[in-house]
Image (spheres, rainbow, N blue to C red):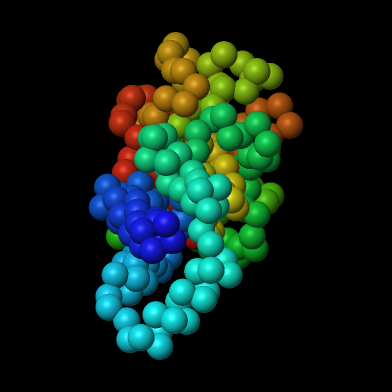
Amino acid sequence: MSKVFRPLLLAGLAIFLYQRLADGTIHFYINRRFVWLIWVAVGALLLIALSYTLPKPDSDKETEHAHDHAIPLSWVTASLVALPLLLGWSIAPQPLGMAALVNREMSSAPAFDFAPAANPAQQAVEARGEAETILDWVMAFGPRPDLPAFAGQPADVTGFVYRHPDMPPDTWFISRYLVMCCVADATPISLVVYAPGVEVADDMWVQVRGHFAAETVGEITTPLLIADTVTPIDPPAQPYLYY
């Protein structure tokens, strides 16, 4: 049994990881800068699985036989190893959404040190050559935002909707998850949006275009994003933001 299931389990794990790489859902689990390590793991697993199928010298066969006799691969052990693979193939991969906010603290201020500069949100956008994100604005605000300095500044961001029960009906969060390493350390970051007359639902992905106002919402000290337009969109291929 060991000679059959060991290479099959290793090859199955390699195929599973390759599928996640091929369809891009590997980004639901880890930061994109670590994806190359998964490619290395796929190659290593396939090589080890192949090594079980290659003919071995008599001396190696005797050693392998002794090892298999000492530590057999039982049905129970094989099932425990195969269970994560079966679950991974049977459950469609999903990025973190509003449900994961229950046990996480959402913030409109960064959890890391940042030295503000003149118009830092725009500087970050120009440096990356990409569209501005919630993270650019959260970093620009800092832990103690100068509200008047952001009044009237235009913004164009995307994220999912989170409606807090203590907030007015026309006011909600547009949120993304910030991932440093993997989803285990994912931190929700958000902007407070005021969109009167706009119907949105929790977990809906939207694009919000508008401008900031120097106002506060309850105990939240952050510029308020006044929405000019709120457009429903499909979830992006890479739903997380990275730092």
